[in-house]
Amino acid sequence: MMIARVVGNIVATQKHGDYQGQKLLLVRAANLAGELYGPETVAVDGADTDSGIGDLVLVIQEGGSARQAARCGHNGPIDASVIAVADSIETKYGNLNE
Image 1 (cartoon, rainbow, N blue to C red):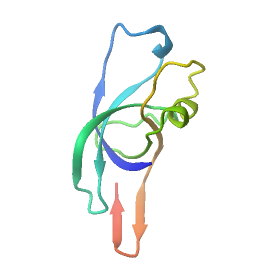
Image 2 (cartoon, rainbow, N blue to C red):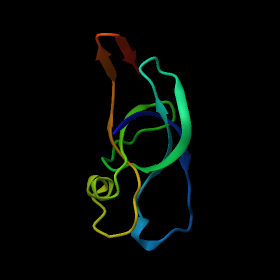
Image 3 (tube, rainbow, N blue to C red):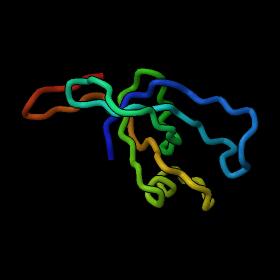
Image 4 (cartoon, rainbow, N blue to C red):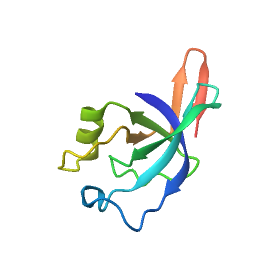
């Protein structure tokens, strides 16, 4: 699982039938200082969080778990799924707020 920021939305007017009705987001990992790092990743909005650009989210990145979190009912590949929107993250090193 990773902490990430939503950096974009993906609009696909035509896509595989297994993904009809699924919202696709472009996310990028964030550290506890809120700095983004690494490449962007496409994630399904698995928890129907209605998250958008700038939101701090939790992303699961395991195929089987991501597919279960997306509640999609098919065996199509899903590499990442947003499972929560985080309002804030508190650690002994500091806080990361939305």
